[in-house]
Length: 406
Image 1 (cartoon, rainbow, N blue to C red):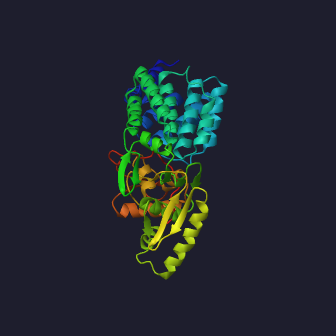
Image 2: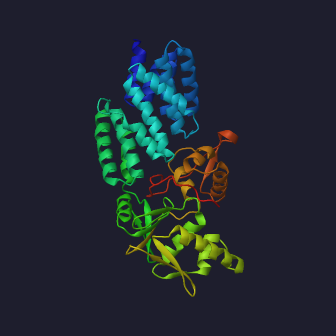
Image 3: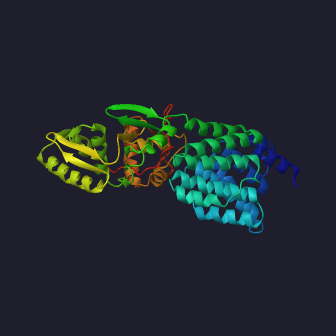
């Protein structure tokens, strides 16, 4: 084994990319190219890192499948960090299978973690849990165990399982301390901070207050009638009605819930559901049609009754009516939440993560840029978007949810 390559690899494993580069910066053989690529990725130069890793993979050739597979896993990690969610996942799966076949369990586990992190990022929690189910993290080194626990914590947060999330983060912190890698410790601390930041706002009887994730979990378990903007569903005592693809009905339900136990005027319902300045006869006729559709959708958990001035919600089997809203009221809040994670996003990656069309996302980005809330870097297909973090606000914790249509 080349002692210089070994020393560079140990420096990378210890979280010292500059130390690794100092050892292999002037070498052009395949192992050195691979290590330089990983080091450049750790330093944030993803373009150069990808070029080096691809050169390394070509240099290794078909006779060294394990080395090529490790290069593919490293490139997949760069794609995930740079939010290139369209990167071919089949290549990562093939690399993982090759590593498992040759007994490289640590890197195979890392490949699986990358697969799961991508699935969590785009909201496919069932697939993520299934992919993670067969992985035993006990024999893995501390850094890999910490990564494993962070993935479990991310899934638990999205599932609103706070107790499980706290436990996973604590295990990740213990493993990170043993690993002694500063960047890993910072990642664990960032995950823990999410549980201490507001994840939603509770609106009830005209008053609003911020909620932590634990409090959101308690609200959903309380048996109250909840209009949940975080996932665009209406939750009754024993049933939930998804309205993610019916934004008008969802907004009507939210306005009625905010007005409960009173009624909401027709003018307010028209203004907020149809974004109309004046409730003329055509809008009032449309309102009657949509209220009829809402009655049908909520049948069994609530009624919508006409009043002299508008409509009122009458719930069944629940003592209270609550609205769970996003921490920040913003027209394009889902897009801003992803941009605020500090990474550079393409419009195509945002569309995939939000489950909507790229054109819808592009319109939202243009409006945010015009308002000074987002900025772009690069041009054409290389264009990437970012926004400053929202202070004290959980960003992608409760996302993704489908972006409401305009």
